[in-house]
Amino acid sequence: MLNGERITRGRRNWIRPAVYASLLIILFLLPLFVDSVYYLHTFIISLIYTIAACSLRTVMISGQISIAHAGFMGFGAYVSSILAKELNWTPWLTILLGGISATIVGVLAGYPLTRVRAIYFSMVSLFVGLAIVALIGVFANYTGGDIGLIGIPPLPDIKIPGLPDINFLRSRIPYYYFFLVLTVLSLLILYSLENSRIGMSWKAIAQSYLVASSVGINESGFRVLALAVGCFFAGIAGAGYAHYNMVLTRSSFGFLSSVNLLIYVLVGGTGSFAGPIIGTTVLVIVPEIFRWMKTFAPFVFGGIMLFVVFFMPQGIAGLFEQLKTKVVQFQQRKTLRDVT
Amino acid sequence: MLSSIYILVALGFALLLTVLGILNFTHASIYMIGGYICYQLAVVVGFNQWASLLVSMIAMGVFGLFLERVFFRPFLKDMNRIVVITLALIIILEAAINVSVGSYIRRIPSFVPGILRFSGVSISGDRLATFAIGSALLLGVILFIRKTKTGLQMLAISQDINGAALQGIKIHRIFAVTTAIGCALAAVAGSLMGAILSLSPFMGDQMLIKAIQIVILAGIGSIGGVLIGGLILGTIDAALPLFISGSATDLTGLCIIIVILLIRPQGLFGREV
Image 1 (cartoon, rainbow over the protein chains, first blue to last red):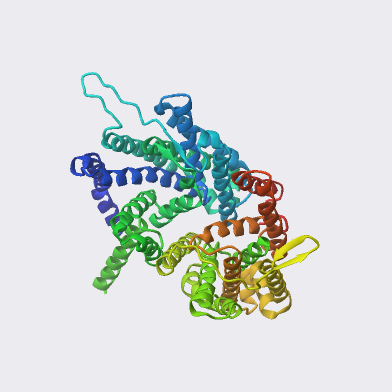
Image 2 (cartoon, rainbow over the protein chains, first blue to last red; image 1 turned 30 degrees about the vertical axis):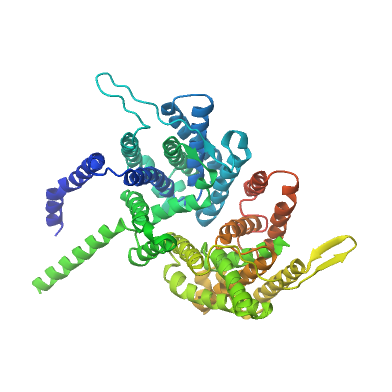
């Protein structure tokens, strides 16, 4: 039995990379088939939220269910856009600085947060997110307060000798490619981090912080590290969003957006890396399909969530695992029947 | 007097958190729906306000039983799924009210019309009634928990669920009772809020944040602390906007909570977590 499994696994080793490669190729060729600006906009938004949701999952695998993530996203967005607007720095640099500033805030908030765990962590992190949004409101001369921040510069043109300039204002396709590259890079970094020794420590802390610290894992240090990594990518996603949308309002980073990010991760499934990616894609694109229902549309969103909770305990990404166990069980039963 | 409403909502939230151990985000929607049921009965059907308050309380209590049986009981062990369920219910309930009643702001007629004056201070009758009802219910719940058998069983479960089950306490029955009480309290708070200020389908979001703030401030597992926490937060919310801007008030309230948590992670009156 074991031998047979190993052989089949060896034979199917190429499937996974092939699926990923074809998915990437499809994503890179997508603008050729989709010429509607509106659909492209939906894809771009779902790419931005994919980065944010995956970074939230990085925080969550260390056992910290954070309801502050949109707040960090907003902090990065505001820092990047104010630097670009007031000081005329190039957005390429300020997006990075937005990520770094979000990291700093995440570390500052993370140390006090290590004193609380589980549900209590979630509730306290909620206040951190709200405090960031309130902070944005306090500095209204720079951030525009409740009216919103307008006049954020877009990404500058890229001039490559011998080729026509890439202009980010004229169409959304350059933005699509920019966010696609950003997403792929971020996901690669997050994936390798998760499967490194650091990621193992995070998972150990999530399973039992007492056992983890007894084998010499610095619990608070690793939890702050997880928060710092998560906030960096959240900040980058937020900053990218700021230079794409060119208008920011602080209410778009409040409690409800944090909760939305959490929903994306939880519905997709926290068990596997693909979870938040699938969750974001489904929950951003499907409500757009049902947009014509107007006030009835939230029922679809809520209905998907309830359906997933009741029938897919591990989230949508856990469905494959569930099916695999079902198939294996069926095969085992069949072999048993054949033997007897 | 806003404090009394905060306290009523936070009390139900705290009960569910300590006894069931779940973070019930739906609580805010129940508060909102309780207010709307009271409005429908009092304004559209034409009942007496007090009768409609009572009916809304009972209706939400029954809804709490349903909620516990269908949505909470199968998933109590799994925090992630409970979070998704409660959030999904918020979305569905808010959309339901939005579709059926509409997003216009509604108002329930006064429970106690008129304004009371004594020695230069004037208080509207509604606010006084809110204060009286809030205090009475709070006292009632504390007495219920301390003096009756069911209440003591709730305390036992909040201390150690397995130990309580071993002692022959029917934990699921206690869970149902707790949820029903919490939902009924939220419905009363919603109805009173409808009379003092107004009703809107999205009024729950703000109140949810306030309730969580109070519970954290008070400390997990402390019912008396909810009273003090509610008073502190109500005073901050009522007094500070006189001196500084609205968002600065929010920031101050949040910073006070974060500082308190830095000094006492278990909250003002909570036990060690």
